Image 1 (tube, rainbow, N blue to C red):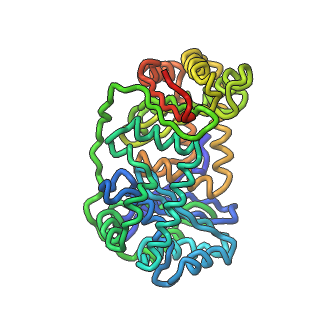
Image 2: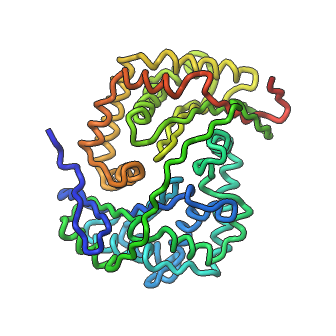
Image 3: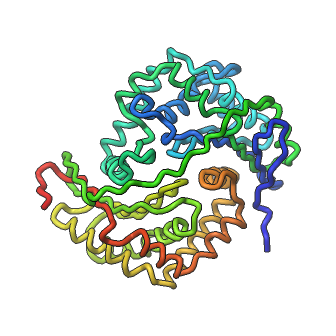
Length: 417
């Protein structure tokens, strides 16, 4: 039976795509704008981190809310909130408000997207904040390992760019850098507007057209799909003052919207869905090789990533690697494990669709790959249709042991043979 948890596309005067999912019994409205402008669109090295930095600067005052405090207070004073995130593929600005103030969701997004002041006097301070964010990640072994792995796996491919950029570039950004990037990418052809909650389609359309009355249609950001040029190196070692060896086992996977990449995503849950799943059981629970181990998948428009991250004893890191690869090999044909992973994913999906914020976040990520949000029924079908043959085929295609990359973040004194 079909649910009512699906999006409908509205016809707008400006032509900007607007998708709405009415939830008559909800007590909130969540709204967001996905901008197809991300880290991969930056011109490195001079623009390293600019997409994410612009996200920050967009909250530093607007025409009607001239300070960052004013921007935040407009939603906070009625119990709402706003936020944003930047990825390689795009930037998502979003908010959530009580239904009694649903108009503020549209007003806030309109101000941030259309009327940001980007004050020169705030750039230095905000870039220092981002530099501290970058340093925080570099001080954290798990986060630093991810940065090293991204660069080693993707190299000079656009996906090899760290979203936070570089300290050198962040220190040199001026207002013109932000205005130029906005001019290139922040226009109607790259916007997707998403709304869900206690709101009718007519109310959503009126709120959107009141706050986005004009559309500047420049050429859309239609990126070429860039193949990954693989290097023969399979191991990278970085030394640092540490107690543990931190390992990333990774491999590139295919286009995010294709079935093999979705099969690998489900396989990741088969491996690492929780404490009752094989990676935790075999590597931690049975052998005491680690405290933290997890598998993950990053899906992108052209090339994605599968990875297993482990923090372990310097004397036993090779054993942890070997056991993890054994788990990959032994799990790919496990049909009961696939059924367990599907049940978990379907349950998580149901819980996510219980509240407007969860629905909006899901919609943003499906827009990343497909250009439009997916509703509950479509997402459920995508999980249900994956078979064990799909999983086995995808693992054999992408996760051969000889193709796995190893990034090792190790203590200074450890010698790696």
